[in-house]
Amino acid sequence: MSYNIRGSGNNTTGGAANNSTQRKKVQLSFVMRDEIENRHRSGVNALQVDTANNRLFSAGRDSIVRIWNLYRDPETTVPCNMEHHTDWVNDIVLCCGGNTLISASSDTTVKVWNSTKGFCMSTLRTHKDYVKALAYAKDREHVASGGLDRQIFLWDVNTLTALTASNNTVTTSSLSGNKDSIYSLAMNPSGTVIVSGSTEKALRVWDPRTCIKQMKLKGHTDNVKALAVNRDGTQVLSGSSDGTLRLWSLGQQRCVATYRLHSDGVWALCADESFTVVYSGGRDRRIFCVELNTETTSLVCEESAPILRIELARNPSCLWVSTTRSEIQRWSLDGIAEDRPSEEPLRREPDLALPGAPSINQYEVLNDKRRVVTRDTEQGCAVWDVLASRKVEDLGVVDMAVEVERRQTAIHVPSWFAVDLKVGQLTVHLDDSDAFSAWLTARDAGLGDPEADGTDTKVNYGTLMLQGLLEHWPRTWTSMEEGVLRGNGYVSVAPYTPIILSEVNGKTLCRLCCREAVGETEQLMLNDNIPQWISDVTVDRKLPKFPKLAFYLQPYHPAATGRGRSAGGALVPPRERLSASDMLQVKKVIEHIQEKVLGEGSQRDSPPPFPRSEGGSPSRTPPSQTPEED
Image (cartoon, rainbow, N blue to C red; front, side, top):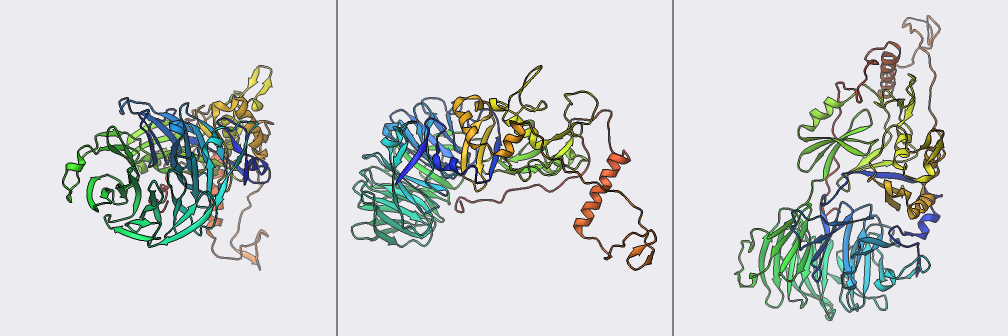
């Protein structure tokens, strides 16, 4: 099969994606975060060690790939961040002697990175669902990718790294026939065998040279989450959510050994080059060492959270371990062969740790629909301004419910955005159905009126947000007598804010930071992908429709003089009780009359930026996700 990769450089996209932009509904999302993100947030899904250059590559649920220089102090070192994915990065492999990195993500893409200079060279969009696993054949420089769409694609890394704007065609082979979602892949260095594990609870073995399935190995009773293949492709080790390790002989097509060491699912495996010693870890937080020749087992160490990845390194001999927490730890293996196996861990403490940062796990949108109060995994609370896309107040460790109630306001603003915490930070989503719902006066919004003429200027939050996010895009600049108008004239959006354009089904079209919109490549991307509903308010400066409903109040007389009519001739409601929606409408009318007609509760003389009043609402906490469910 041939797939076209449009363009080159760090913003490549699949050609098919752009052709469907006009036909499918597109939403805009942005991430509210700190300008400098030097630490992982939430779990780290993948690790790769570059022994020659003493570097560690890590990637995880915050969507960022990081490169750590291990020559420096881990407490003070600043990693190189490679940002281009928009969802969890599930796996990475280091190729071409450490010069190229391949990453697989839940944004359905596989990306090719220049790991020396730290930029994305191309993006592969052949998968239709989360890409969960990669496998690497070192001797052939081939990579396989698999995911929830039940497809396996084979890639020639040398071809991927040679892509240019004029040479942008990639030929790939696919392995079809999997009946369930793929969670693990493994390939031997010579690329003669590839093994897949899935929720089918079985292993499928393929010959990648002919793309023919050779066998299916049954024995596990749950999802196969981890795989390792020996050099000559004759043996496979598998780890499953059923808590067992199984050693398979491909020649005999059967399981030759079963190890029941873990009390819960096995999610990570790592074998030495000779395939005689294997390390396993998983949900029970423990790492075991198995010597396959003697079947000797020992408990190496115990982590503080479920283990997601184990990577074996030399000089010094150690294990790099990542978990569902954000830090990465190194456990020394020096002298471990002389230690007597026992039920107690051979290592009590790691000899090195790369610190992580807390992730946001709870949020509450205040009823002014502009500020959001959050709490992170270290119980720290903060206040964020959505219109500015930045943190405005760090509250520390406080009672979140109290802080939310203290900041609620006596104003009703319709919901105009949605929020999720999947990457451990606030991701705000805007779509054309709700983005322009929030109309209010500049004074009520806590915005200074730039016209300063005393009028009650109406503003729309969605319009202000989109104009602020795209203020660096030259197409949105408007020439005026006093100069060029950029942005919305009220609030400046943090220039480091990542912007994501995607189809509503989750397929990413492009990603860039606000300040990068001035670049030539980024301008072309925006021209291709910005939908009409966004360009109307940013490029053409058209105001969205302002929905107004005219009504009048009429006295109601309960004493009816005729069937169905009151003394004044008005219709009597046919039912004795009002529904919940009726009461909500009545409440809105009462609040409107109190504030606008009677003048109660308004403070026109000195309105604060964010009016305060009593009242609150329950906090929102995302449903907990265990790594197993992921």
